[in-house]
Length: 216
Image (cartoon, rainbow, N blue to C red; front, side):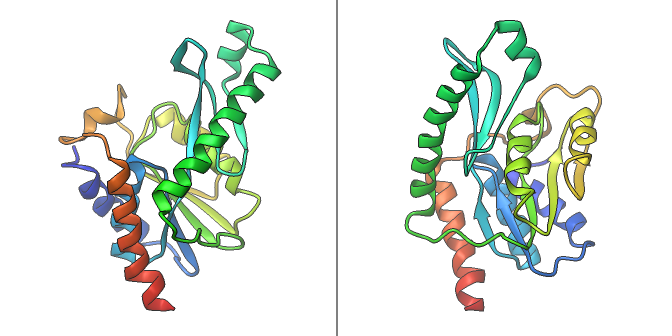
């Protein structure tokens, strides 16, 4: 069990450190994934940025996701739920358009004037605090895959089935723990309180000052 997201990031960084990290960048999925990604970036002396993904909730049952959309507009759908509920393509596109607006709003809030860092042609280490269904991570992976040289997904804890699925989508996946049975990500953290918008801004700014400004 991890003490909190910062501790999980430190443990995760130890495993990532064994890789070839030349020209790498760490991307955290807000909000919880950013606290994990921050520790990875600091320990490995790599630049940190965010990559935002939003779930597409069924109208009236928002907790039930029919898919997810990532920065840039790429989205994936949960075929089983779409077919079961008879959700049309037009409905999905309407949900995606609404969440794309929210993604852009959050990018402005989280970066608070900081420029987005370039990922084209680089090795990207995509980090979250854990994977249960994998829908958000899959949307992020498919959005980034065409742009980057190498794509690595790194998480402290995940369902084994999700890790297996993602292995077909990325160059490498690192899951510190794949416990069975897997119930929920929060079960493997002593402190799993929600990360705030202000914490995301603060971590991103600190990482930017530590690495990007120093290198420049």
